Image (tube, rainbow, N blue to C red):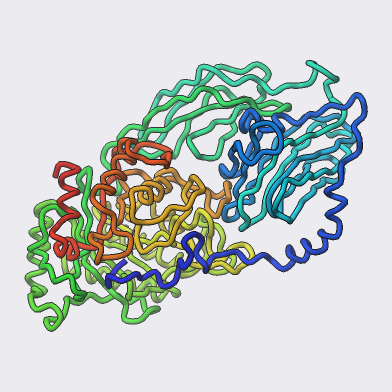
Length: 630
């Protein structure tokens, strides 16, 4: 963040798109398989056996003329486009991201002990077409050469008891988007020819929302004839399967609007989605984890221990606009010691620095006015690695000493650089095993338990350690990625019930992929909208829909920005800041990005820093006050 005004990404994101350090290295065994398989490519690309006279095309919506009706795509990777197409007016575009290979599939009812030919036209590099659950040998065809449309075809025989198969298409990790059109599955019609063929049910009707709480909403709908189950769809989240005609959706954020749809499922496939219904959760009251903060808070860092050209600001001179004041910084005696020390800026660097006694008096005055004062640990130069339990215990002891000496309200974690990284094989953010992660979580929990519910806990990670986790997590399943990618996610997740505020640094950042699978770049409203939407919606980590980082409450989230162009790369003008706030809290001025909710309870803004804001004539804080009526 933090410290000097220069770009301090440290080379994390040299590319305008995917950071160089996390680009996937294809595994040797897969590459070798590609080479061997190329010898058989001609056979895979050849046309299948001619269909018998009684055969039928059983693929539903194989030309994608009805959108994605009948198809299910992983992690929202699929979309229907009008160019390029092979036939008709539409085709499927699917975009791999992170650990997701953009798999789109449908389940088709088939006849046992029968031969079927699967075909499609594709465009792109490493595009696959296959059938799974055949009851005999599952098959696939593929092409590795981009360019013009190519036909893929393969044949399989169903098992003696097989009544359905899943047909699919997918791309490959790290490759661009690919296109698929005119998918066919030709073979015996299990229901005979004509209207006797089994059909998916009609879309459910009567979807109603009720019984909202701060974290849940009740839904019910009218049964669809022939349905054996239903899928519940919420905004951009992965669908949830249910067997009845009602469900309670839990784990939602307070004071947030959600949109729901439901589809019906049977052995023949999935229906279209119902008409949407929107509902909002309640405020929840009490704001757990946010002791004594106003509904909309302004957070700033005060350069207390160093000088950097912005000028020293005494605690007593900090304007009343600031609700949370982070003393920057407490730093370790060595990277791995866990022993944190805080000292005021030397008089030689900061001639107007107050004494320790004057600072303590000013802190008490701020607290009497309802403000919170925290010690921020880390910063650009304060690398902290709690690799041992001894370092963990030293961290708890030394941070407690600082809090007690200055009478502070809590702790801000601003670990940057190489403080947090994931060990090879640590792939599940819900159950971390890396010592520096596990020990940090344990240390913070101990501090929280010691000081009780009034303890304020905030975090200021960079986008590399949080939102980049949508694409990459740690070193990846085969190694070769930057192990710091997404490394804050297990800490945030484990401490979410204790977390007061998360204010990710939306600056000094490379371009990051949002939930729309598009790259977003810092400096304008779009970046803050997309990055904040990810925190408030949740997202599959490394594209794995079985490992979804749950959304935070809006009262736990603030947007982090530099106060001036001097403070960091990615400065955002007040007009663009207000556009971002309008979009996230009112769903207006959103530009091209479609948020997954509306969050009037969004907590507010954080800036680096109070000192730089004064240097800039208090532009940042004055704009905050004007927007929120301060």
